[in-house]
Image (cartoon, rainbow, N blue to C red; front, top):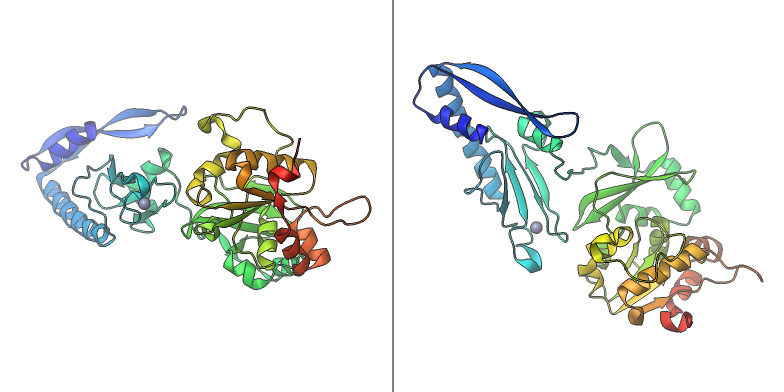
Length: 364
Ligand SMILES: [Zn+2]
């Protein structure tokens, strides 16, 4: 409201005046506190500012309209819900695009909250210096991820060789946008995308240490590959997803957070509390279309617990389960990549094709 008052004063007839303008800044607890700042404004500077703002706004409006966003109803410094030109609101047909314009009306930032769309952008593109963008950052607006902002680069020789040993080809790496972190360390970056847009990233060192980009929505790895799939294969890790692709099945996704230690509780948690499996609900629009889901999780106990957790959420009647081939008399191969490396593409393909109905495999 104080900003609104200031804006009214800026549009008032040019006079010399004193006014108070509030500067919002979060205190150490993350709450906004208000610090009054005294400004001396001359008539000439008022006119100059006013003209510049009109020009900036006209330019911004044109750019935004070229993208299909209508910003006539937008008030600077407020979040306005608009129609998303990319998804037109998806199934809900609602105004799912959150749009924000800076106080000077020279920069804008937006993100679509339709989970299947997620379109986001900003103008100017490198506007980190503009006050509007800084304020959004403080207010925990979902981050806009880019390969540049995450400092990602194409895979170098060392990691390409590492993947080659694990039988993952350059073509598969490229198609899945597997990258590496720029810098001295050797770190794989598995990029998570939805509708082609970067929405998350999981890092992995060669010593098998994992971490993820904070604040990203939890989704399945490879989601865009199962968008129209009638049959979906689910694995337990990104490298298994790449392995299954090497065996001829691109219609495969990986869970983003591995396997649980065991089956959590007999009763399913209500949706909003089911955080460990939120990726299933976030990707439901793709999953619900599939008539057959092949669970190809690891052959160990956590892998079997994961299969059970997935099956009870996805519906056991449409789930099949892969049984990994025997390694020797006492043990079996652990996962898709082990089968690929030790037995080859054909063996992995056969294991997936021989999946058995989940309920038949788990009679108890
Ligand atoms: Zn959208």
